[in-house]
Image (cartoon, rainbow, N blue to C red):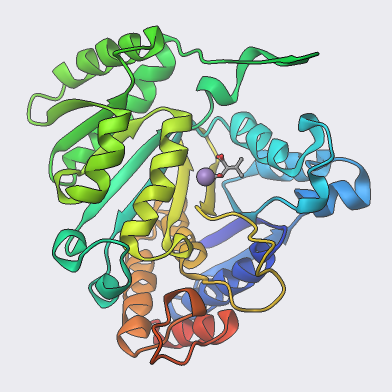
Length: 353
Ligand code: IPM
Ligand code: MN
């Protein structure tokens, strides 16, 4: 029996709904495998700003730093558009990632056989695709200084040092060792000095993993290959901004942004969040797809608690629920009758064996 202690940050919009769904599945797993669940909830994002004037209150950050795992639904609200960047809900997420030193963000994108039909790609191209994006998460243009606005100009800075590139590359090569042994490192080395450094550091790390093949690819070409030949990718290693963009693109291959999960690792505490945002356009209607959140819960069990069988049980339960024909609105074809976020989560919880 383990104690599964999780700091839960539902956040904004559909983040709240998918977090409930994930919790429901986690409770089922804890019951089935006799673990003790200890979930502590804190505010983050717009709702935290609205009630306390800051999107990341001290007590939230302190709880997260204690770990060992943090689950976050989503942050963001249109009412925050008028705010300064430093107090916008997104800044809470960026600060949290940085404070927790979660420098490697793993975003698996696998096309479910049940959902090939929903892929934005032709079935013969999408079928069987299975890749993981390893996105550098605590550096690059998201964090570089100087940054800011000055009259008619605005500045952001893209900066990486060797140590930041080395540590995230190590994560990618290690992951590839347990997969199909192929790393594609994505950059813009034909234009950016930072990418030239990125390329040479990744090359050096790769030399220590002789049984893993490494290829470098420019980001524009990668964006094209992801939709024309996605099966050529196994582990995709890239910087913060490129990884952000390419992971949304990869989600179209899978059928919906709502499907993708993520694990942010590297520090003492793991941070787990679905790849999608707070989706204000559909928030509060109970129609969000909870699969990305539920799968993030599975990643949490395996990465932060070493509960691999339990994580596998969640994945199987999701597969079973899809095989039984249940679909949330984003995945429903014309002939399907969509179920709610809650109905889907209840079905997954019941399918946990
Ligand atoms: C993501 C999101 C965030 C990011 C936003 C909300 C700051 O798009 O996790 O992909 O850009 O990292
Ligand atoms: Mn994103």
